[in-house]
Amino acid sequence: MVSYVSYNISYNWELISEMVAENLGICIFPKSVVKIVDPSRVRVIPIVDPPMSWKLGIIFNKEKYVSYTAREMIKYISILLG
Image (tube, rainbow, N blue to C red; front, side):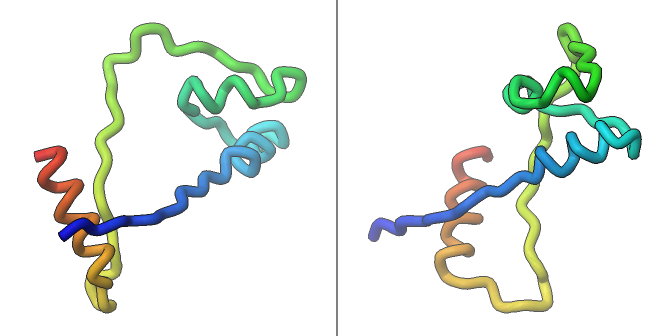
């Protein structure tokens, strides 16, 4: 049986960069996002050879029902990433 999973990932990079531009904080962005930030409004300082990697996790509300499709996606990702 094949399960087809559809999902949409939405990041609010524009909001975060606007907050930085308004002097409401700082942020570390992925290089791909830095390319779309307005350099006239914020200062970009490259991090050269960062000794870090993204560690990702799957989160869901443990008090709520998890659909079959979501359970299959969690299982697939868990197998894929070991």
